[in-house]
Image 1 (cartoon, rainbow, N blue to C red):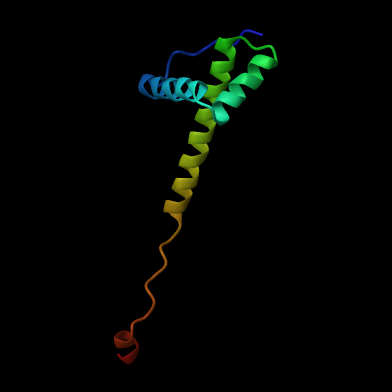
Image 2 (image 1 turned 90 degrees about the horizontal axis):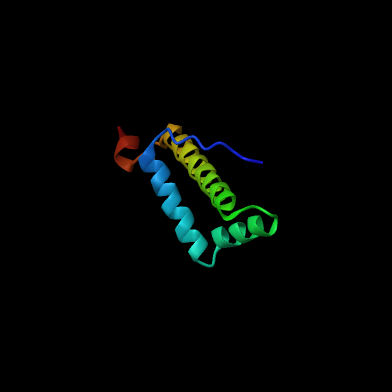
Length: 87
């Protein structure tokens, strides 16, 4: 199955995702294992790299949403000090 690649969007982010994916493939971690599994499943190197980039972008997006959710939480007020209790 051929997937059309949209070259639009943020080119800087796309480039960064590509560099992350290529670096992970060269290493010996989760990215390399995922890439190898995709090749074993019959994907071409280009398809496997595209799938890895998508997996990385999904992870980054999920982490950004989690960070935003943390920022949206109200900060806990400081506990009362002995001076404020006496007043």
